[in-house]
Image 1 (tube, rainbow, N blue to C red):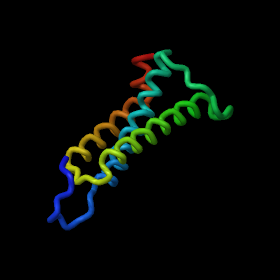
Image 2 (image 1 turned 135 degrees about the vertical axis):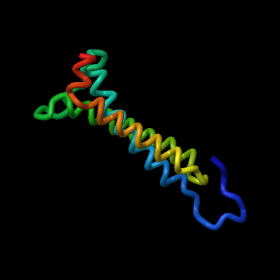
Image 3 (image 1 turned 90 degrees about the horizontal axis):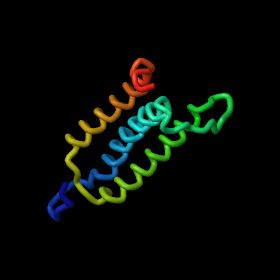
Image 4 (image 1 turned 90 degrees about the vertical axis):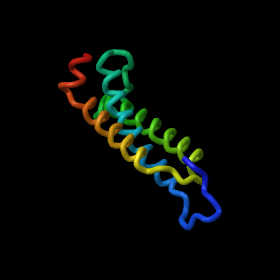
Length: 110
């Protein structure tokens, strides 16, 4: 990561990439909360009765996403960030979040 230099022509891309990476963090948080719920380490509360524990897991994942976005945005908003690494990390986090959410995977832990 580098800060903007005087001769740079574009706007810093840090704020946009912070939002991008935060999406990956949020997706991973969904899978993480599914796994820790299924292992019995954390029982997600049913915040909305008809949805059951899913409402609690999604709420906690949303909070993690918002915190991740706020922290990354604060740190990167005025910077030029190398996008290649951010894209790769985001795709890995999304893939892990999706995989951890599928019953065959979380049944291994449960």
